[in-house]
Image (cartoon, rainbow, N blue to C red; front, side):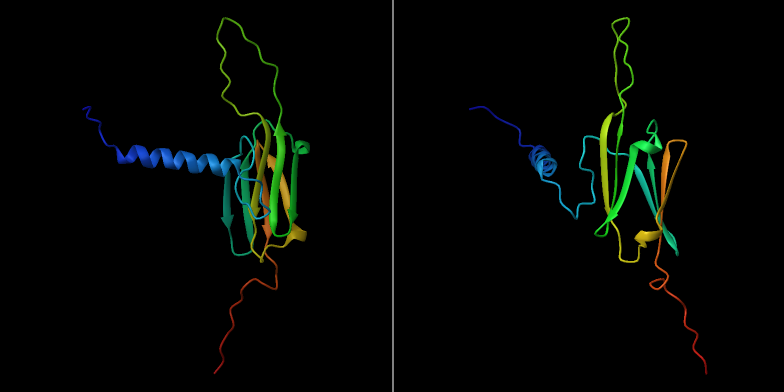
Length: 145
């Protein structure tokens, strides 16, 4: 009789991997707020009293290669980082930087003003400014005696 070691963490790890595989195979959803492409730019999302700011790292992507849309309460960023000419000299070859199509979608709150969105790209960082609607911004109401 062989003795085998029971590793509950190994079972959980395999289960998590299977769930991840299923998630990646799921069809695109209109309400998705996660990446649905081979690579995704890293983003910072910040809420300020009068606006939301999304910053995405897109080094090497030209502004005319980026498409930003706002539809049905979802902000979508898509584009492509092109392949550069690759050389393989001396027997060494290593490619670590992601290339190809990227696609990010974010569910936006009702307070977002889709008509006033602005975007800029500086030093490989895409910045999207989404103002909040004036009517929805909170205001302090003074109580008089």
